[in-house]
Length: 115
Image 1 (cartoon, helix red, strand yellow):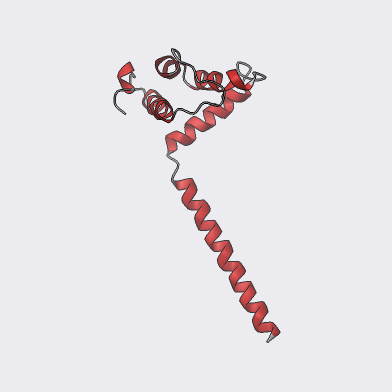
Image 2 (tube, helix red, strand yellow):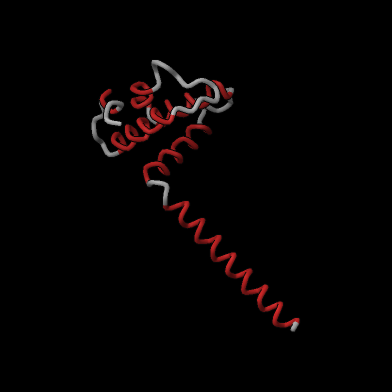
């Protein structure tokens, strides 16, 4: 009887690990390649001499500008993000601009209108 309980616990443990692995695989696959590329670039910028050591209130704008100065100028320059501000529509526009510019396509101010 004890051996049976241990076997069941072992099987449940293996099933839990398998489910956890599937959940991790799904969450990674939902992130687009361009979003991962932008995130890598932002990490590089955060560690760069241009942004390193800045206070939070200026850090996020610096990272965005470092990742793509052209996209930053189009989307955030006139109204920079405030400390802790999240602006989903501009984030999407920035990602779209970053994607197009990384593929060598020209990006105009109309990138905001296309959303």
